[in-house]
Length: 442
Image (cartoon, rainbow, N blue to C red; front, side, top):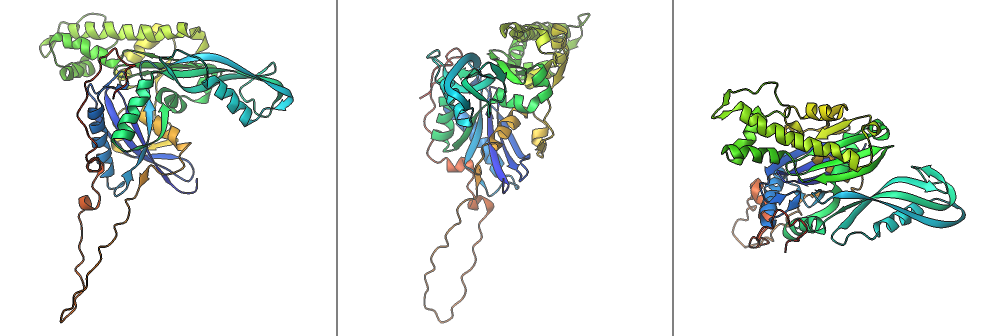
């Protein structure tokens, strides 16, 4: 990469919208220099955009604040890499093969044709294939992870098809392209991108599980022999615990505070009758423990669904996401599985320079941005076009004086992302129900 390039990324989840800008240096290292976020409330549910206008406004607020940063202005964000996730996303294993002439050398084009065959697989018509991730290749009768350069008359492979409802991707395009005029530089499957930066090669080769506990969904990806072998999205997360606590006659914001400050996933040896405000500590504990154990039980059950055992993932479980930060969650998962459990951290090859990003759950956002660095051919940010000087009309006077220099304020020089939206907004639509994830918005 000859020069530094600016990368912009968006993570649109059920709890928040995070926007960020980073610089990819000549060495390829990523430095994140600006991060902003807004709570998304109910405009996004289970990872899918439910309200086009509200989500557009949230993204506008985030982008506008980023563009006004001194280290960004007067550049404008013109394109983004965006993360893709949702409760319908999962993996479907499929086997494909191709016959070849005798003693054919396996090339990139042959591997690409094999992947194209996988992408054309016949699946449930309510789903679309987003990507095909190779698990293992076989050239002749020899298994390999690196088939290029091998010789044979047949090549086959097991791919994990990443599938989801078309509405998720279509609604993203409606917001970003149609409403906001942003170019989508690339769509990244967030859980897979997170696995690339949160897990090391040693863990993936020996076998491990990555668990991302979000607000309304929990994604589970399992790796063995260096490859993805299982991917599923569970329709619950940290917000389920919060809503359980609302049964104590509290609004969601207050229930969230109770969960964070006084909740613990591990049941106490003795129930305390002390009060937290007007609530018994024991009542808070009962709600939190019951739901946390249910979430963890479903996470652990994914090992069986993957037709694996705990012995197949000796490197244990790596946790990320806001829901994973609940007090006692790491210990509870370790207690259920007997495996070692650790929290994911930002890797050393990604530098977080913005203090905002250091104080928030930004791993997934960083993963989306890092995935974009591999395919970034041009900047996501552009300088505004130079303003042409107005023609000066000369008048004949007795004494000719130089025209006065007119200075504009920064806001006049650069209208900001929200101002550029202009008249693109339309009347808000009727949000769809929680169970209608497959419905597209018009």
